[in-house]
Length: 227
Length: 94
Image 1 (cartoon, each protein chain N blue to C red):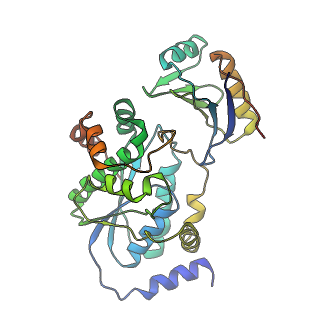
Image 2 (spheres, chains in turn green, purple):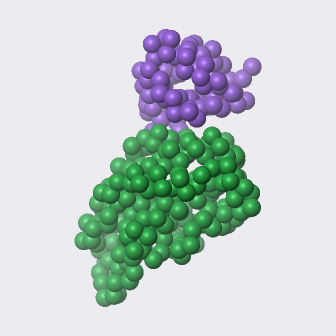
Image 3 (cartoon, each protein chain N blue to C red):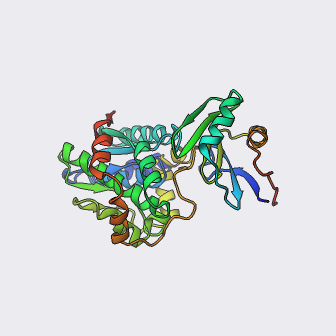
């Protein structure tokens, strides 16, 4: 059975499951998020995608990859997934200028979650979704996930939390998103030299006192583009 | 005296030149030097984006990202930048 047949078979297997609820999915352009989205669509959840546009700290490639991921999955499931593109570069600049660089990845994630929650409010979505798997990168340690997600109230679904990298890659290849994810692109230049792998919420909240969180968030959401 | 290593970045879309030990670039001064040599520079406040043969970003900690996937082209661009800004040499640690 080739990849397309495998994916089709998996999709067909769950056709009888009734539609569930509406969620907002954070899409990065990497390998994990389209796989997580695949599982949510397979369960017939109604999904809205959010991409945090990190230019000028990356190039155009993450956004192009997200658009192609959605095209591939929409084709497989025959359903449209709206995409919100939110400017994250200005937020990164504020964080880099005003807060401790060591905890920059967690601070960045907190704004991503907050932005996704704002989109969820607008879209009447009841949960957030991410492609995080425990311990894969610096921002995905348990303490960092705790520090990052404490910024939002909605429940967070992580379909890949117990997967290892090889398992995620195998599914990505089977559903046809792996080739898109692995196209060359710029690494994030806002990542600090030595990102913190263990953070505590008190420290993060102290850092956030140096910036106007609501103003940054309002500006980010106000400039969102829906595709 | 430090050195730079030049390598393909993790995403594979550009070459990065990483100083060891880390430097502190005075971005305002760097911007002035580049502009006085006719190189257009955008000041993103925490980093500079300069247009040499290829787009280049310079961070405060001395990291340089050259937006090409061609090793030879990246070397040429970095060599020019190094001369302009009096940056340390690239050391081949292989």
